[in-house]
Image 1 (cartoon, rainbow over the protein chains, first blue to last red):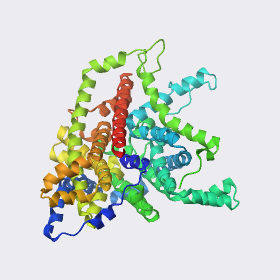
Image 2: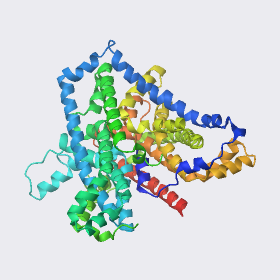
Image 3: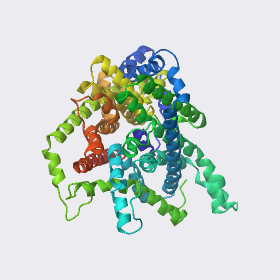
Length: 306
Length: 264
């Protein structure tokens, strides 16, 4: 994903492959030519089938067969109080993260398309470099800042603004801060890519016809930028739902989201049935969200020119 | 069409946007300050700067072993991902049919599926195949999850490559392998290198899969950082984190430099 988005950032349009395809004459001499090219695809395809799709298929299978065949595991979604609580926490944190990320990302993307060459370059650098820095390192940085005896609390106490340390970590506040920090580039880049395609003359026309600056933005620019916002929103939400590292480190085991809950089920309590059921549920939800997304905007566009 | 002059948005919008970018960048830089602390615990330097934790890092057997393990795994998995991914992207580009489009989409799945779901699956499979705690196990898992990055970057590079060159090569009598080696690969090399850099960073930073399948004998750097944050809070972690950031940033700048040279 990060590679795709980095690519979006350098939005030089690439020549369409279709044109290339049209230029290629069908050559009867190389009828089994296509077969040879399938040979090139084979190593990657086999790796993917054997070591990616097959293991995930097993996870789905275990979810309906462990400890006994049937949908008993899935019934827990409705009956188990602890799972309920965890699902609500996951949904709440993911929604909150997505909303905050989108607002901040929109602001940055909007400024990006209205910046000169130099400003744009620096701002994009400030977005892309964090994107590639280890998620563990980023969570660790927040850990240093947000701890009870961390920098933020120390500074606030030293300057007399507060008397006792705020609890910024091991609760939802810490998790949301860390997650927004991680998700921002994933929000900014798709919105930016979409805004780049908007014909600014539409806004100029609205202004020329007498719309105020605010009205031109609300009635013309904002609606045109919605596909990017929706795309980025679903992307960020999907990533938030299954996010492990940051919630686990900044939640400190108290704010449990689904990914960590699954890890506990498998590695600590060893309840494969429950763990795989939750993994399967996560997959289904993400699949549905992407299906919706696919109906709203062209997924390929979001994923660059792959 | 040109965008309106840069000054066309309010100063407030612009400064808020820069504030968000600062929110992205500044917290990360705290790691450098803390890594230079002279205190025995995680904190800002008090009476002066000290390189003791960098020294500690370079003399600690445990950390050095982890760096070594991470390097071996990242290099091996990158090699596999780059080879398989490049061939796959070239094949898909050349076939250019519905089926090959489907293959390209398939290659993107590891980016969308949450790592935790894959970690469960590969953990199960490696238990059966007795690959838990083996280098081979981690290398394969990282190679497969690194594939998308290579397929994407190489596909992008191929989109800008003139297929007539390939036809010319073949009609002049070159075999498929010669064409690949002498015509296609040199032309898309920047894309391949980008893919390699991204696949390398992916493996170098990956922690979720490793937590499940690394067992006791393989102990990568992210895994040791993870344990460190959860257990000891030794400031050495800050030194390691600083080194990791520098590594990633330099790799990114190499990538940017290569892409700029190509576009000139």
